[in-house]
Every structure is written in structure tokens, then in C-alpha cells.
Image 1 (cartoon, rainbow, N blue to C red):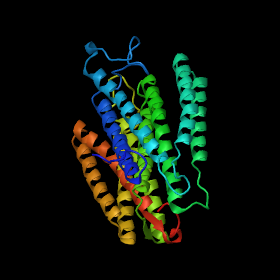
Image 2 (tube, rainbow, N blue to C red):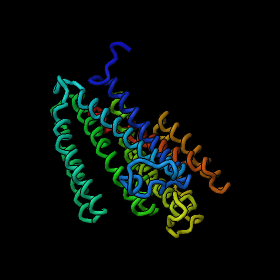
Image 3 (tube, helix red, strand yellow):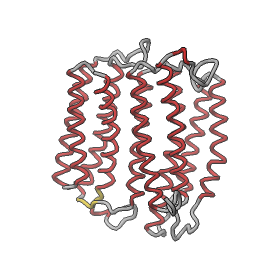
Image 4 (cartoon, one colour):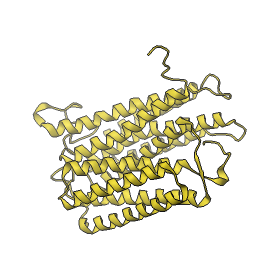
Length: 359
């Protein structure tokens, strides 16, 4: 292992990006395990596990251990996200031959205390709307600041432009992790409101999409150039995929796996919603087939294979009364398909984009 660089090289950045993507997919599985085992209220408050302690008590059983374990995954994600951000800001190029860690340090010095104060105020006020709105504004301000300090300029060389985009995406993921933790707290305080739980999952899937884009940029290989039609079909496919995944969360919110025996459901008809969700899946598969004919890309072929497998799992769980293992595999499949679709979108560059940066 001698001579292996943890930061400062494109290979190191690529490795961190992969670890970041894997960690964000893994938390979908752990979160799904919480819900499917009825452990959603194992820790009945947040950020503490109980009113008396941040740590679980053995006498409260396996549900608390499962819920607390999922909360601990946030710290794993945070560590990986911070490492990824450091790797991104350590990259050297003609514009920044020594890297750009001072800019990251400045953002952390300003952002971390602000988020910490906002979090404490929100918890002390028992999630008062003003406190929640205030921390939301702070978070949005940090996102805007991160985009601003990682902005690209037209006169940069291709490597510098790619590195700036890598830094931007790494920051967005790093900011998304604490935001997700707060939303996770809101799900607990809302006693697993199905719409909040569904939104929590959708944001996680959004982070998976950003993480996938970061992997593709970190890899640094050329994109597949296709026609304007191929470019358009790829973007339409991404929209249909988003709708399909969201419909899946609505189906779940109306079904039996609520995360807690006392958690309320949406009251919608799960059978009808399952059919509507299936129609969106059929549209997604059809679009993928057309895209494969137009683009003739291995990335699209792998996506189609994943969609067919995911569809088979979905049919199996529907016909067999939603067994826990099948539902968990379906959730994992959704996370993987989001990553695969994002890769296809990144992979298909229109002919008019030939020669542009960020290939």
C-alpha cells in the first residue's frame, strides 16, 4: 500500500466517489429495513433516541437497535462525504496547482456553526415552524454559496472545468447528508407520516443521482455522443423514472409496511396505485428500448436489464403479499436503477455538445 495517495489525485477522487455512491445506496437498504421490520419508532424522538438518552437501552428491544443502527449510518455517510469533498478540493490542475482546500475550509468554518445553532434551536423549540424555516434558509444559503464558490468560467481548460464541477457535486452531497438527517428527524416527530417518509426516500434517491454523476465525472472518460433524439429520449426517460419511483413511494405509503403498528397510512387504494405505478414502469421500459435502438449503448442495455429484473421483483412481491425480503430487494433495485438512469443521462451527449467540457 506504500505510495497510495488518499487525496490529491484523480484516482483517489474516483475511489472516494464510488465509496460515496455505495454508502448512499446502502442507507436506502438500512432505512428500508427499519420500516419493513416495524422499527420506525424504535427511537421515539430525535436527535435523542429516548427522552433520557441519545443511546438505546437494551430493554427496549430489537426495534430500537435497528432504528438506532440506521441513525448511525448517517455518521458513516458524513465521514465518506467529507472525505469525498476533501478529495475533490485537493485536486490539482493548471488553474489550481496546489488544490483548493482553503475554499472548502472557509465554507465549513461558516456553515457548520450556523447549521449547529439552527439545529439546536429547532430541537429546543420542539420543531417550531419559525425554527424549521430558519434552518431551511441557512441550508439554502449554504447551497447557493457552494455553487457560487465552485462556479466555472469559460476561459478554463477542460481539466479545470471538470474539477470545478467535481467540487460542486461533492459539496452538494456533503450538504445533503445533514439535511437528510434533519428530515429523518421530522419523519420521527411526525410519527412516520407516509408523505414525509416518501419525501425522505426521494431526497436520498436524489443524492444517489448526484453521487452517480460525481462518479462519472471522477472517472474522466469521454461520454457517448449520440443524436439530438438520443439526448432528448435520455432526459425524458429520467423524468419518467422519477415519476415511477415517486409513485412507488405513494404505493408504499398506502400499503401495510408503515414502519410502526400505530403509524397512519395515506388512505389511498394500494391496488389501484400499484396498477398506476406499473403503467409508469411499462412506459419506462418502452422508452429504454427505443433509446437502446437509437443510441446502441452498453449503458442503456444494462439499464434495460435492471428494469426487467426490478419489474420481475415488483410482480413477485405484489402476487405474494409483499414479503419483506422481496420489498427490500425492490427498494435496493430502485436505488440502483436511479444510479443507472443517471449514468445513461450523463453518458448520452448530443452531437451539438461534441467538444464541450465535462465529458
